[in-house]
Length: 207
Image (cartoon, rainbow, N blue to C red; front, side):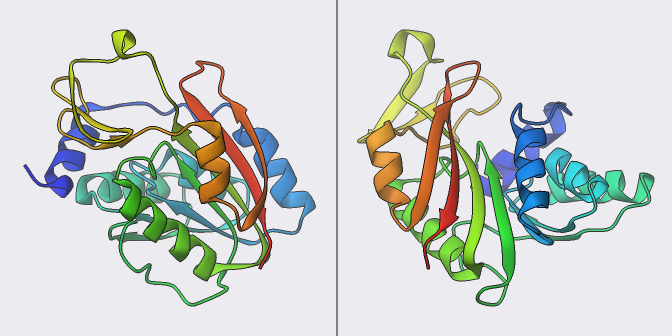
């Protein structure tokens, strides 16, 4: 099964409309900083894109899943909101101009690739983000093997579940120092989410 089909299947079976726990606080910071254009990178079924549109931002979203994009477009239409949503991979060249966005979010998504792809995505984030632009990223952290679903390790820090809704989807897990290193072009603050399974990173671009 290819990556697109895997994520299409995921969005058909997954129904979670709860936004990330820190998003209200992040939105308040965005507003104080005068953020206008926000990219939801790997927007999935669009719960955060819809939330950001409700908050009055000019929202853009990109995701590899056609199913996810259809769902978010239906939600936006139902709520009478607008956003620029496209089907594309976050691990390829993003379809936006240099210095285009004031802020970018990517929730539990950029870690679904090998480290080479992740670094490519970070470079694209840096390209399309304005100087002093803001990011909010959440990524999988190291979890004890006994608490994971059955999995196959395919590279250092990289595995794929053998069952569950994310069967066959690549997971790369970070340690705090490696996360800070990969986002070295940003002035960052890093913390752990309430479930203690993900790191949250808020950063300002030092372009």
